[in-house]
Length: 420
Image (cartoon, rainbow, N blue to C red):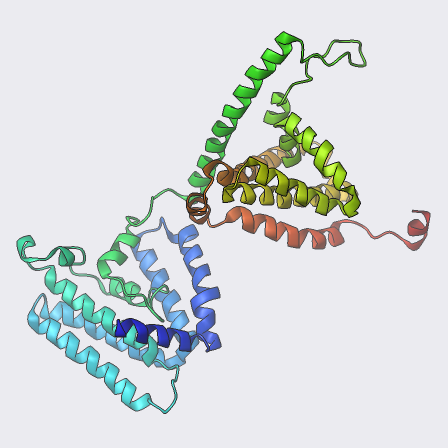
């Protein structure tokens, strides 16, 4: 427990150093995302190189040329493993060398204040390298001689120098911890510590899964619509052509639902009567607020609460609010830009339509994940597994669209403004 408290104090104090704070938070997370997106399915050698050089970059960023201390200790530890093998001598030599090197570092760098120097991450590295020697030694024992805990970390093979470097400089634990074993690192590199599904697969899976869930609602509504039509309640008078209409109780427009490339199109084709009721009795009666966005926000809040008290409903309708307004901004941009409007109306439209549908269905399923999973412990895992890509996409779009409008929409002249 004392060790845990000391580690917390070191970490907390160290975060007052700007470089270290940047390395732990804003820089560490992008490194992890780059690994997952671009290196996760690469060979072990490429992964080791990425972890080694990214960790060395963080170490150099924080401690400059003093990174040589960690390099030296890692190389010597590797030589001890190779030259002494799985022996008690190797374990004792590793323990004595690593501890003496750390204590000498403390002695020569200590002041009356808590300083952020190379010894801070080195104390983490010391435990890691000593643990490596012990795990390597345990790997030479018979299975019957090892405890259950030792079996979880024992190394059955001799690690390569590149592997030891990747393990030592892994950006997620080099600076302030946590401690983990080389066996755990090996499992990470071999993709054993993951569900092994690539990012694109998860996104497509969500798309299909959400569509199937929506079809449950659609099938029920179509059946009840048939009941209403059979009873006569579905009669809706005649249209302009004099044809009889039987869609008074229609709650879904199937063709629009399947073909629209717009989020608003899907919303307008789904749960039609409920949306009409809310528009008539809630949205329009909030006109006294004098702000359409506020009216929309409170209407969606009402819908979320009406569905139930699960957090998933609030997340779903809050995302709907953001997505719909971003889409309206994008439509306005295309409409007001001569260049974009001409592209949208040209022979390139089929290509534009495919891109629209791809974005539409990819992110139409995204806000419905919490709606279908209800509780935060479930939908948070799904969003984490795809790195909150929908939140990031629409946040970036919300921030970028005003600048795109300045680029693509010509400014009105003074005379035109007066006429308007």
